[in-house]
Image 1 (cartoon, helix red, strand yellow):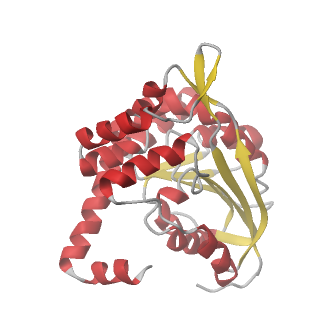
Image 2 (cartoon, helix red, strand yellow; image 1 turned 180 degrees about the vertical axis):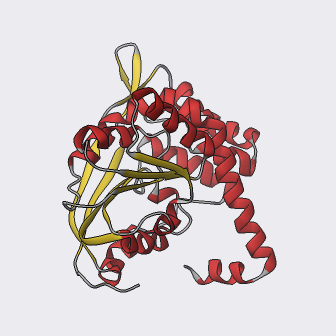
Image 3 (cartoon, rainbow, N blue to C red; image 1 turned 90 degrees about the vertical axis):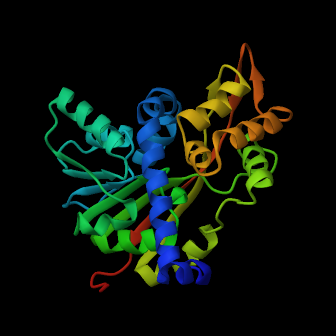
Length: 287
């Protein structure tokens, strides 16, 4: 936790700000849940498949999925590990409801899906064989605190697979979106990845694999792409925090030089995700 954030959390006004921020995040994901599942889940499925393919949990024990969203990765896990139980949680009650609906329709009883903050995973599961996190860690206010918590969940021999959006390379569509937003709001993407890797040994963890993952993400028009980020994705939080009008101004600025590539009658992005495979290094880690 940074000194600035620590100072704010000690005082009443700062605590209120953090509660308000958490409420904005929860309300934003509740608002976009069904649209996220319809628009982004099929487009991001290749990334999730790559993450599940890299996942090798310890022989016994449940699998934990913090920030499960509508649960696409949970269903993929069940295909690959049909005999495992899964504990899945998300801060959004609407996201959890979508997962529960799919589980009921498939007659699956081996998943516990519940509402909960990803950074509080250890309150829901201990002695987990593994933790799978997809597109969640980079959205949290304190990724290092979340990693500390997830390490508490692991049994000896357990592992963590984390798929996340890193700081985008300059000139990419996502980098240009972030630059447009930062120009209007003064807020940029949190820099945390290097510090997290340096801190892994303190959590009893070690990095086994660090790779970049890219797949084409199509859209009909550049405007549709930005609008989907706002109406069905993470920019909904920006819209609620700073106002939809400001975000529309960001879209106008971005559309002038968006960076998407034309492919036939459609447009594509090639967003780069980062995949970490992390293993627990000790058998008697005490937290």
